[in-house]
Image 1 (cartoon, rainbow, N blue to C red):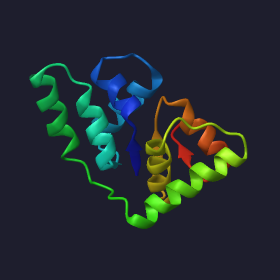
Image 2: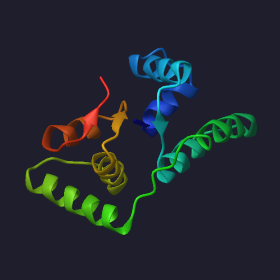
Image 3: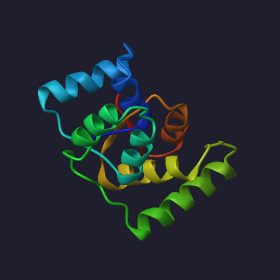
Image 4: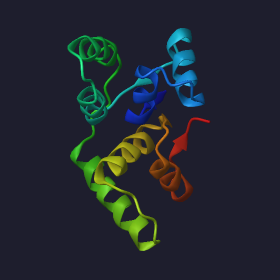
Length: 130
């Protein structure tokens, strides 16, 4: 299963020809199992300027299985943030640690353009889609 991060959805919806956007197109066309997390839905939808784009994205995102982080997942995200900080690794926010923790917990790979996740993956079991 692949969780698609906000950065990858943004590239996809903006028609970006990046490898990550092309990988997402391939996954959608082949029916590869994708999932999302509520915070990714919110982050993705807030980027739309038009109601038409918003509704189109909402329709697609709400068809995906939802991975709901538990309180334990949130605690693990805080631990992840703290452990990375101790190692001198800067992650810009709690949200990235939460997304990474959900992926690690569920064994899902992450499709992303965000470099913070690459830094997290260097120090954890987070699997990044190549």
